Length: 312
Image 1 (cartoon, rainbow, N blue to C red):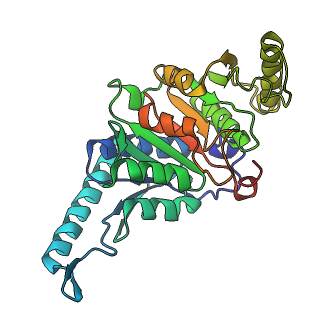
Image 2 (image 1 turned 90 degrees about the horizontal axis):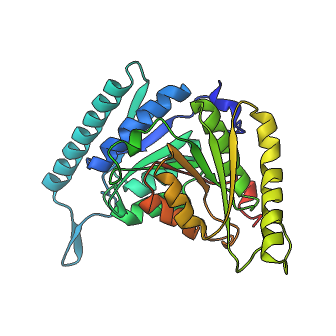
């Protein structure tokens, strides 16, 4: 099946999977995942490392001094990290087209800056923080501000979680216009993987009926209405992907905890960059924020196209 099957025609056939590395355990896991992902999608892989040298210096009187030996050491370390990552990716997917990029920019600037031209951006995460030198700040900055698709691969969960090939693809459905991009990506991933797709819509009793565009409903009526509208949201995609088996889950609970539970058995979790309760300027919703920091499987955060960013 073509990797272009799921409504990503705006991405060129030459678009690469980009993975950020910094020499941490999390980044090696991300490289392994990205290499397999790129090979399965018929994409080349680009390995990038941001040295963070722009603006680096020590103030001495009226002058900013950068010690050349320090810069040389940082550059050599960067070259070593990139070379190790390239070797690792090649061992995971022999024959994979691999390129590298070493930049004086920071990791976050590098990944965000090139995300618009990428098929997907992949980053690793360890513990409760991301990698790429600035820990959680970089992880959240990239997932919030990158364009297109970002995949966060964690290393602190079950031993096989980052490379799990069984279990369903799980998508969080919130009913927002920008959520359509996540649904499209989830159907495409389920089709590519030959996996079941579980569509989870968790709604709160504080605002029941909002998913269906109505208010002042009783709890039981609202639940039935939420289920009906979820089915309607998925119907068009089920017609486009008839081979994908879909299970619909509508639950009265906060979405974060339910999706975290599903991440324990899923091979991939797909969410939009923000939910229906987010503000147009808030590019990463609270649910997505929680998942990229705590999920037990890789999390794909799908940003809407630019023309959808203001439709909230």
